[in-house]
Every structure is written in structure tokens, then in C-alpha cells.
Image (cartoon, rainbow, N blue to C red; front, side, top):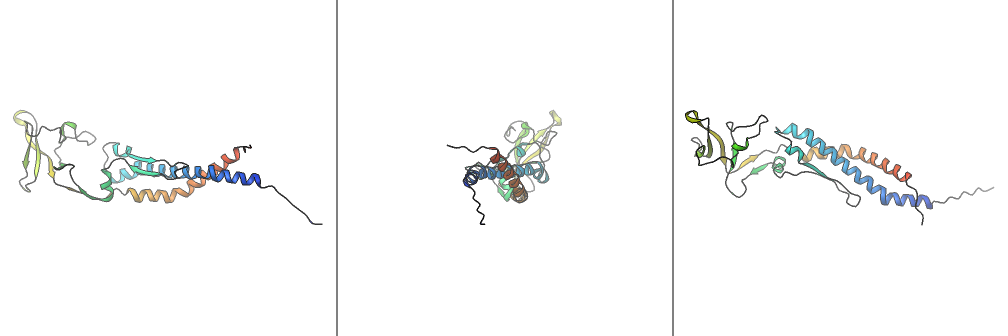
Amino acid sequence: MPLAISANFDDLRFRLRRFERDQLPFAIAVTLTRTAQAAQREVRDELLEERFTLRNRWVQGGIRIRAARKRHLEAAVFSRDDFMTLHETGGVKRPRGGGFVAVPQQAVPRTGRGLIRRRARPRALDVGGDRAFFAELEDSGKPAIFALVGRGRAARPRLFYVLEDEVEIEARFGFVPRVLRVARTKLQPQFERAFAEALASARARPRRRG
């Protein structure tokens, strides 16, 4: 006696199409965003402290992400600070609009965290006034900014800044390799997690008829 089995796959096909249209792009977007967030945390909380002496959290706060969306499956990790580009690629720092790059020296007054005090920054110094002046260094002939330290007869000129035409910046950030490493290790587990969440969400959603 022949045995006939029939099944209606319309509901399954509907659910699969809906999952492909709605849930799968969502899972991919979540995967990309979470991976970018993981890379952001590692760069901000580990890499920067490994490679630089941080005086405050400004540069760390500049490590940002751009989240992925269902209709734009792309996430990004980046620094808002343009000056960090040279620390990644290496190269020559030149002054904007001509002039010089002011390289601070040991005598520049700093705060307890190592930041140059506002009154001692090049633009804040009254160069040409009573307390600060330009002079050339005897050994190299390079222009420099000196400032008087102390009061009255005890005041002595101290070298605050050497003025350079350009400064070589070492490539020491390692931002791109670290982000790629995080992506390679985190992308697969993040997708598995997001895919499972998308499946659970799809099962919980009733089919709309009409």
C-alpha cells in the first residue's frame, strides 16, 4: 500500500523570506556595531595607554565609532583628532599657515598631570614683552623662546621652546593593526550571538496575514 505524505511549506517560505528581509540585515548590523565597539574599547582603554603618555582623557575620548544600520551595513572606528593620523602613519609635522613648530623643553611649567600650563603656552607668552623673548640657540642657531622664571633680581631666562621648521613624527600608534585584530577575533562570535537573537525574535513575532 503506497504511503503519501503532503506538507504545506507556504508558512515556512514566508518566515524565511521575512527573516532574510528583516532579521538577517539586523543581525549583520548588530554584529558590525558590536565588533566596532569592542575595537573602540581596546584602542581607548589599552592601546593608547600602551603607546603614549596620556595627560588627560581627551585623545581617548576622541576614539569614536559609527554604528551600522540595516540599510547601511558598514561600521567604522576612527579618531576625531586629525593629529593622530601622523602617529599612525609617521611623517613630518609642519606648522599650519607657515611659521614654526614650537617644541617644549624641560623648563616649561607643567601641572601635576604633566600638562603645559595655560600661561606658558606659546600663544599665551608675551613674547617681546618684559617676561619672554626670542633668541637664537648658540649651538644650532635655531630660533627659540625664552621666558624669565622667578621674580625681581632672582629672575633668570629659561629655554621654553625650540622653534622648528618641521618635526619628524614616529609611527607608533598601531591603530589599524589593532582594530583588524579585534575584528578577526570578535566578528564570528558576535555574529553567532546576533544571529541567535534574531532567530529568537523571529520566532516570537506572529505572522501577519492580510
